[in-house]
Length: 168
Image (cartoon, rainbow, N blue to C red; front, top):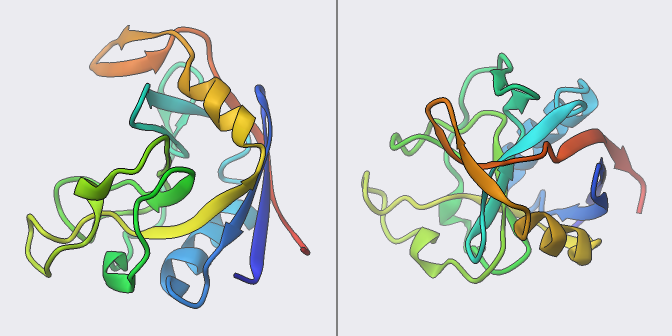
């Protein structure tokens, strides 16, 4: 892993190592959003204790941010949805990931690649948290509720203040 991102949140700082060898297109996509400042001022809009924390797509008030075109799903890269790994969020369409990502809060084997079929694609892991796991744990424990059409929304915004690529 050669690329590193530091994500400063309202709950603390998380350091993420990206695997640009096994997930080159996904890492390039994520870094393009990081370097464009896309994640700055967004929120973790979906938090499910014992599952994952998701962010990268909404500003406070659940105002959706525009994104680039979706990318090819690289979930068949051998990386697993283990605790503290980062994966791309997507719709039911396997190749629909754009900016949203999630951090696994536990080992989520059922999200792993099984086959190149609509039900088997899984979710592409492209990195892991290497610093600030206590921040991830704290975010996972926030109180959540329903807001508009969205479930599992933190009752108090958990902001991504800034995400920057750093040299390791």
